[in-house]
Image (cartoon, rainbow, N blue to C red; front, top):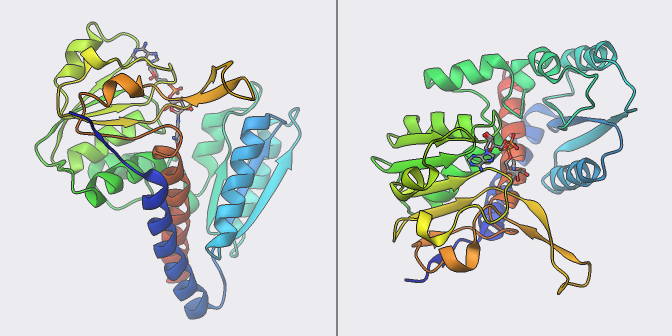
Length: 291
Ligand code: NAD
């Protein structure tokens, strides 16, 4: 069997079109576009690229976007003051801090301070609690995008065994909760999982969000499984002009021979994440503006 390669870019383009329409409606109804503000701390080049891409994507769908660049020596208090200011600003509907933050900055304190109504990353404990309760809330973009992608591809989730490798707050744990909401049977694995291959081989849907390139090999995948690769790492590759390439957590060439569907890296989950960040911003704006 050779897997269907899921085109994350095409799905993301459709999601962005939907967001664009929603943003146009919101803007004409309330006389103001949704506003997305990003706090970028320090000079991590990868973070700067992510923030630039998110800003450009926002503007393309009509969301006003602004980045607040803070020096890498900033204190937690100074960032909290900025968050307070943006929480109080009625032209701001979505707000997030680009991760990672420097060691002296208390990331959890920042996430607790962002207004739950503007928390487009879905990392405020209020949103995490609502997600666990199965109530409407802002959910992290990557897991939301994956569920939506599976639905758009007509891949069943209901009743399926789902194995998630990686227990981060931004991907693994919220994806687990969404699986419960969708009536799947999820299992979550991490560095202390005793027999990872035994867990991954039970999966009808296998999601890898680890950051270890090529961790998931062919013999760890049940024939016919759907494989979703969230990992993005730089892998040395002398055959390329720049000497490296992006690599996922899944050994793509071998796993695509056993899976029924698979997401590539790049061009799989990455574009969906940005599209869903925009969708979260439009959702937050609609709720805030409709009072
Ligand atoms: P993380 O980096 O915070 O944590 C990694 C997780 O993997 C941990 O829970 C750890 O227990 C687990 N893990 C590490 N090694 C393991 C092993 N050998 N066996 C089993 N479990 C192991 O997680 P994250 O922030 O979710 O990021 C994971 C990867 O996904 C990274 O490559 C990141 O760049 C990528 N990512 C991509 C997107 C996207 O939009 N495509 C979004 C978020 C994260």
